[in-house]
Image (cartoon, rainbow, N blue to C red; front, side):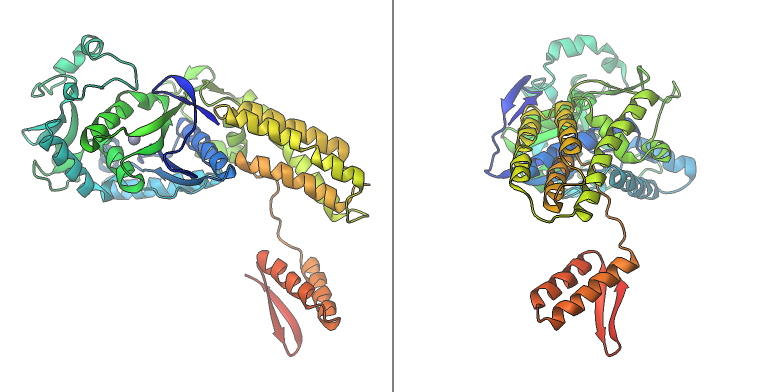
Length: 468
Ligand SMILES: [Zn+2]
């Protein structure tokens, strides 16, 4: 399995730090508003990366933070006349709703910056003690030039940075030793949320959050650190400097970044008026369509969002869903139960599509090619399964199709609520089985119903049932 490492600018074979395990950190959103579709891309991409690792049998510890203290949150709180805490809590809840709609698996842990301040104060102190940071008038800065490998992720040279960033010299932070130094801790201004520290009552800089949360929940060294490509510099570069200076060890083994998202061939921006939230999209489309759209391109290719492409995605997804529904219908209405010898052979042939799918995913998570092999499988299902197929064959095909779609996070068969008459038919069958002393079958039916949320009660008047 190969993935592209931003650090080495090469596709590398994935070798985990610990066998069978993946420790993965993805920078999460700053929560001051509904998330936009640019935020959705890394969520969908890295959720798919995680799902594929899980499919391959890895145990994935997936940590993604919420930045819940920030200038933008404070600004919004002042505008609305509420606390910053109220703003961040509200938008974390809204973000989780959107993530559920996009079928993003909940993270192993979603740490909040405001709950991890202690660890940040500790790491900042460590950096000061080691000579990597200094305090001036209550502000703590990272001494960038002290970290000799600064620039190794973004492939930037310190001297170029300095000449290219003359504005840094006049940014009002003239108390810094060097314009390249960045903030680890800043004192509060009137009315801002603040925490105690040895340097001032204030709050942490953005970069230190991720270094600390990643260390706390995943350890000093992790397998994969990921995010949007706009985070490479300065955010991830600064995270590396902080973590490696403090811990004295390489931070992440692989750095993964998704490319940006344009809207109608323009950069998304509030001033252009082409800003789209996930919530707005959800009013027009099932968010599964948005997910399908995001995965239809390779994650390192820029992606253009347009009405036409969303329509094409809707149609594409529908083709897969129709095939799955057809298989489900066939398996429920087949004339024969068991597979013929020809069918057994035909089902074995689906392995070809599975292999093509895996080859695409093994090649730096090429979801575009993976989707192409799902379409090939759909075509195979549509041409080889029909009214004469056995239930087992239709079910076998559906299982393969669902397994692959599940890696992509696409739900192709929705669990429908059981009809009353179907429930009653099963209860009757269970009674008959009991009478015939076939208790195994009777238990099986009870379990099946329980799995669908139907609870049975044996009463003197007979069996009663209710929905859980
Ligand atoms: Zn981060």
